[in-house]
Length: 224
Image (cartoon, rainbow, N blue to C red):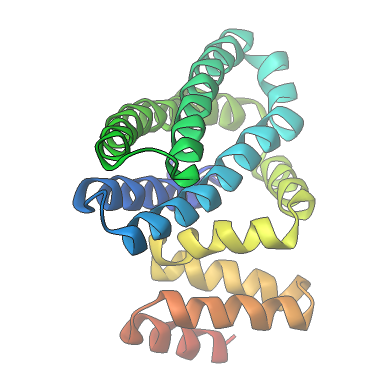
């Protein structure tokens, strides 16, 4: 149903980019490279913020529809959420241990190795979970709600996200979505967002996009 409003697509594209970046960092960095390890830890903390926010948003704004129209889908999603939360807690504990830096070099190397393996497992399971949301989940919403109702859910989610958390979401979403999707997203901001918020997001877009993509977005927004 590509013609229908897709609640999950933009944020899921951003999350996929975020997790793949983390996997790349963990796989390509030596445990003795303090600068790169610190950069990984910092990005990991940011990604945790949006993963936890995404889960809360679903519980608050979407689960009611699943419970009403597809309780079996809700049960599956909650089962996946529970397993992923446990995996994420284990990862956070390992990263906390790494950041404390109280171990000998051999132990630090072992922890770094564990982080890479656990992150890969978590990412694999999380990507499957995203497919559950985009498949049975989105199918339920399309079959039982209008696009207007789904957009209202999206609006409620966006308005509930603190600005700092939204900035992290957008850091990953902006380069992950298509040009047309970016134009639609920023055109909505031009209509409804405060000027300061729009300026901040455009500044982020300039940083996150390559020059041709940024020029293309600017040109499209000027025509609106």
